[in-house]
Image (cartoon, rainbow over all chains, first blue to last red; front, side, top):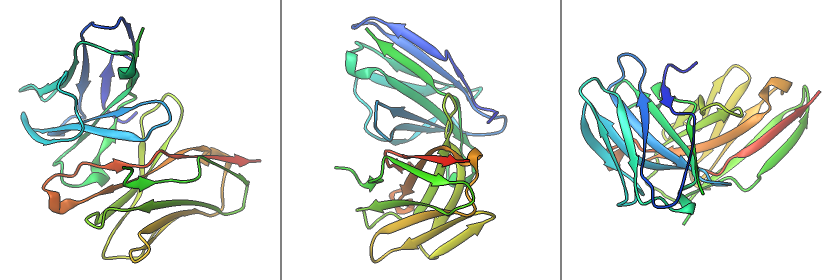
Length: 114
Length: 114
């Protein structure tokens, strides 16, 4: 158990819908990262938050947004869903966001868009 | 454009033998490299890392070698054990970019045969 909790574990929804994925980082970790893993692909960095502020942005679509709340949990919002958005979405957390040896990943949320 | 490439999708090795997983990268700004291990239904787990100022880092049965001129790194597992069977991801980051987002390869599935 990495200490990073992602909910839900599985999500099935229809095209055009909107979903919210939730991540609770390890206790004391200030930084949260979101990654997308599509079929047969490596993990693609989406976005990083550090202590409530956006720190870095990767290949995140405009239909996707994220935020980190004062209690440090984070949510990834995916809207106008398309079939191609079906993927595993991972959240990771670290204390400082500057040392990846401290980054721990959650189990992921498997999103299926039908 | 894939900046981190793991050209072998799978690898089978006999228990007790050496496993060698390879990774190539194209971005010369990458200065920190990591290997993650992933079991089914779990998030990636950090395994070992290496900074670009080194050419070797060892941790128990795991050794990572970095050849900067060839933009190539490899993970050696000696001796291989059945519990090592997992998908291994190579990842890289460019600390000078101001964030520590990771760029991942697509992974190599290692099967250690008893």
